[in-house]
Structure formats: structure tokens, C-alpha cells
Length: 270
Image 1 (cartoon, helix red, strand yellow):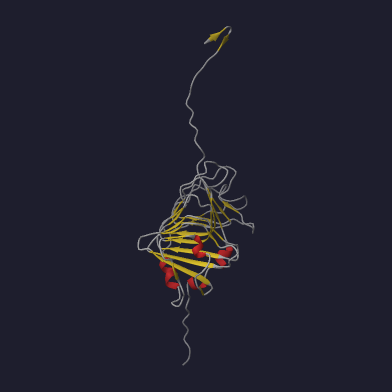
Image 2 (cartoon, one colour):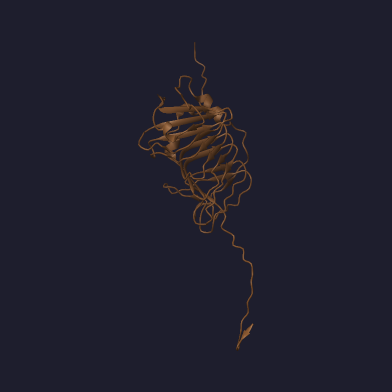
């Protein structure tokens, strides 16, 4: 098109804007995957951050990974290990359930929907912990509101047998004072609105973070024999959708009664 002495050109073109992919990150902790280990870490970031001691963890995988020595951890480390599978002992729900002493006093969770406050008080102290058990026979246990243990000095063990666990509220505690451990015979599903979990979580099936746009910060440990489903997406390359932080205080407060017992046989003179 010409106007006076000036010629103008006009054209249209389609532009596809692709939002950044979701990614996840670890702080001061090891990661062990029985298969592939992937995270779309943006440029300038690292998958495994150093902790207060100055060292990152070691990511271990048995399949394939898209992590490299340059983005797996800060400069000077670059730790990344590939390992074959193991046929060692399975530390699943039944293993831990079998370790519980017969005289342990366990409070029954009465139905499949409870408020988080149910675990904040009451129960019976047994071997230094408050023990709770839910038997679902296929009906999941849903904790419908947050569990706030801060300032209570309570150490909670939650056993879920024959069912999964749905967490619909944050679970928070005072570092080094309270403990929370969930041992689940099925899957653990986290509501998308949950942003903070503290404690130790074991699932015989999967651990799902929930499809959502808010970051999930887990301070503690997760063991999931069916895999971890990282379902959140913040649509940016600034913050990870899920951040898993190592919590040494939770490891140190893990109940010794649930640990593996070693027996040494020794022949003595009659």
C-alpha cells in the first residue's frame, strides 16, 4: 500500500507462545529413583541445592536422566550416580506395622473423614509417640483440615491400612520438637491447595502432589513404591513447582521401635 511517497507493508503471522515447563528441586537431600530421574531445570538454576552444611545431596537413578554435571548441583560438586536395581529388603507399610510392639496403645481413627485437629490433642502416649490407625478396607482416609503441631511437643505416627490417604491441609511442626510420620498401605494424594508438608511419608502405591499452580514445599522425606507424581505447574522458570527439603531432625526423631532389629547369636558356655 502506498501513501504519498511512503510505501507501507502489512502482514500477519501466527506466534505460538510456549510457557516454561514445570520443574522440581531438592535442598540438602539425596534422591533415589528406581527408574528415570528428570527435571527441566532452567538455565542458571540447580536441581539439588547445598544445605547449611555446605553440601548438596546425591541424586541416584537406575534408568535415564536429563540432569547433567552442570545443572545437578552448584559448582564444585556435580554429583550424579547411576545404579542398578536392588533386591534388598522392602521397607513398606507391612514391614513397619510388623515392628510395632504388641503392647503399644493405638488410637483408632473412627471414620474416613477427620479434621487435622484430631491429631493435635488426645490419644495416649506410648513409647514416646501418639499412635493412630485407620483401617479403610478400600475407603481412603481424608484429613480435611490442616494439622498444626507447633508448640505441642507431640510426635505422631499415623498408620493407614487397606486404603490410601488424602491430605487436604498443610501439616506443620516446630523443627526439632515435633514429629509426624504417615505410613500408608495405599497411595498418598495431596490436595492442590496444600503448600507445606513436614514429616516422613511412606506410600506402598503412589505419592501425588496434586494438579495445581501453587508450590508445594515438603520438609522431610518421601518414600513411594509406586512412584512420585509431580503434578504442579507454576508456569514460570523462576520457582520450582515442588521443593523437597531434607529434615535431619525428623530422621533423628524417627521411632526406634519401627527400625530394623538386629539379633546377634552368641554361643556361651553352659
